[in-house]
Length: 239
Image (cartoon, helix red, strand yellow):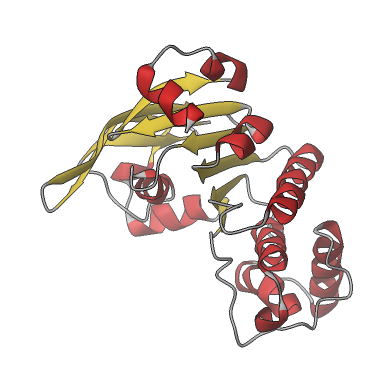
């Protein structure tokens, strides 16, 4: 479980996070929903310790990472993984080596075992036969799949997703949505997703938290959120 308590962060006097309070349940899919520019990415960077808050706490399994030094943070981060919005693949190496990279960096594992584990992940994300392809040869949806395989390769306890359906056509978006759901069903890891995609959020989330003007203004299941009478949220949902 991750618990965020009264988190505040400003840049050059501009308050981005203004007292965020949020509990993220373990082994569930939590989507942090909000318009572009509301601070979702800033919040995510705090959760993995890339940014230090001006005040407030982020508890991961009861330990406040906001108060940790770099060595302690590195240990916590070893249990996290991330799927970046643009995939963030290394352009100069192929699909196989992109996925294998964190495994080779973090684990003492033989080349034979690397081949076995990476091949399995490639199959799970529907890219069998693509392991020698270079990133430039892949479509946007394929890049997302490679990114997901790489995020899963070290069996993290928490995976963060930055706008996983951004820039995809509707058919590819649906395939990525189903892949995320299937992946979570097989391995109930804690998924934290930031998104502005309402349809995607309602389909995938166990819990939704809406970030607006630096605060979480509503949280709950999809059915609970849909019943809200908050005028901003209702207007946001109606477009």
